[in-house]
Image (cartoon, rainbow, N blue to C red):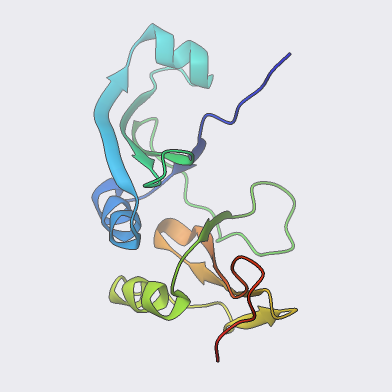
Length: 151
């Protein structure tokens, strides 16, 4: 049976602020809606489900995020996820320039959990605490097409 990843869904406190964060990083909004009714109750498993949603896509068209802000039932606040907790962990993006991506994230009040690391001269990467506590990994490939990184 063939399988394809459709999207990653993330519940957020403020849909508009979260859209602004991800679109500033380069994602594109491909749709917005408000959903409710029996079909959403069945699909999601919550009675009276009513949410504002947005689908965002990477510019290459291969990665999608579905963001949803609950109107009903009321959203439940939780502590931000820690990197070593079981469950949904993070969403990761490759970027051309990690410093530029971090500057964009900082405009939204989002900063690295610790700093920027280099993995075996292959990637510079970091985890950023994004809107609604979402952990976002940003990674810049240092060696492209087998050429050594330029320092």
